[in-house]
Image (cartoon, rainbow, N blue to C red; front, side, top):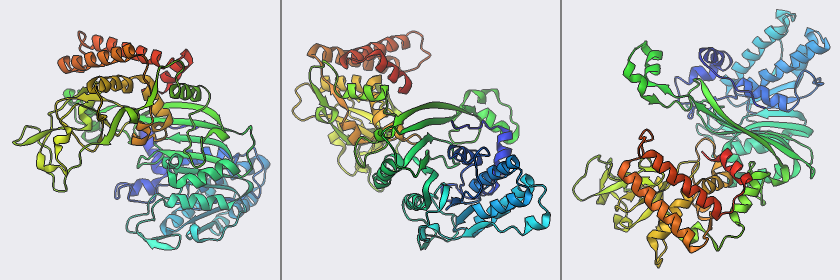
Length: 571
C-alpha cells in the first residue's frame, strides 16, 4: 500500500529538503514547462519496496538504473536501502561505498540535474556511512552520467530499472531526446522511455516506473500495454493524483520480467488526493496575517496545492489476463469481481423488454463552435444575441440559460439549428450531469448535446426518458467503470463511450413513468432552484431523485451486489 504524507508546514519543509532543486525552480518557471519534476522520494521508496529492494533481501551486486534520474530521488532511495543492508550484514564502510559506486546508475541529458544528483548522493553518503573517511567520500566515483538514454544500445543487465520518464524539458535548456536536440521534447516521449526501460531490465528483474495516466487508455501505448500484459508479470498498479506538482494523474507500475501464468494477479490501488477546502481568509492569513470574518465564508479551491489533503482510496486485485478485454484495448483495472458482473448485467439486463444503445436512441454531438474573432460573452442580453449554455450552467435536471450572451455572428455556423429541445452535459467530468434545455440556448463546445433522432414521433418523451437514465446512479457508474475512472486527474467523457451506453427500454408504462418523473423534477428545479439549504423544496427534489433511481434499478434488474458497486463508485 502506498503511504502518502499529509503536509502542513512540516511537509513543506520536507519538500524543500528532499526536492529543493524542483521546489526552487517552481517559483521561477511553471512546472508544466519545466522538465525537472523528479519523482518525490516517498513514492520512489514505495517502488523500491514493491520491487523487494529492501534491507531484508540480498542487494549485493544488484544493479539499479534510472535512465531519467533528474535530481536523483530514485538514486537516493536505492542508496538508502543499500546502506541499510550493509548495516544489517555488517559490511563495513568501505564495502558499502563500493556497492553504491558499482550498483547505482543514473542517466540524464541535463548536466545541471546530473550535478545536483551527484551532490545529493555524496551528501547522503556522509549521513548513512559516517565511518567513511572524508577523503574517500570526496573521491567516490558515482555512475551518474550526462547522456541521452534513448540513444544507448540495449543492455539488459539491470535487475531493477526505476524511473519516471520526462513529460517536458526544462525551458531554456537544450537537451537531447533520442538524438533530437530541442527545447521541446517530442510528443509522447515517455512512451519511448518506457520501451527503452523495458529493454534494460534483465530477465528475472523488475521495472518500477511512474507514467502519466494516459498509459492506461491511450491508443499509442497499446502495443507496449499488450507486451507487458503478455510477457511480464504485473505485480502492482497504483493510479493516483498529487504525485507531481503540475498535477497530472499518475500510474505507478511494478512489472517483473517473468512470463505470467494463468494464476497471475495484479494488485491495484486508486488514490485520489483532494485538497481540503481552504478559505480566502486562510490564504490571506498565510500571506499577510489578515483577519476578516466575512472572508471565512468564501471557499477557495486548492486542488493541486501541497496543503493538507484528504484522500479517497480504493484497492483490489484483478487477474492479469483480464486487464484488457481485447488486444490493444485499454487497461480497465477496476473491472474485476462484482464490478465486472455489474457491467455485464447493465449491458444485457435480465428480463428487459428491448435493448438499444444511446447512440441509436438520440443524436450525440459537440456544442456550437465559435469563430476565430468571437468576443467575450456578455452577462446581459445584447441586440441580435443568443443565449449561451456553458459547463457552469449545467446541473442535474437543470440548465440555467441566459447568464451569458453572444451575437449570432460569433459562431462559425448559424445557431438556428439549436433552437429545439435538447439535452446538454459537460464533457469534463467523471460522470454525466445532464439537463434539458428547451429555451433555444446554444451550447458551447465544452458541452455535449443530445438531439432527437429525425422522425422520432415522441421527441420530448424520448429526451426526458434519456434524461432520467443518464442522471441515475447505475448509468453514471457504468460510464465511470468503462471509461472515465481511468482519467483520474482530468476526466473527459468520450462521445463514443457515451454512444455505446446500454439502454434498457422496458415496457411503455415504465418509460412513461420515468419521463414524467424527469419532467416533474426539471420543472421543480426551474421553479424553486437547486439550493440544498431550502428545507421546503429541496426534500421534494430528493424524493423525486430517489424515485427515479429506484425505477432505473428495477428497469435493469439490479441486485444488492450491483447496488454495492454503485455505492462504491458513484459520486
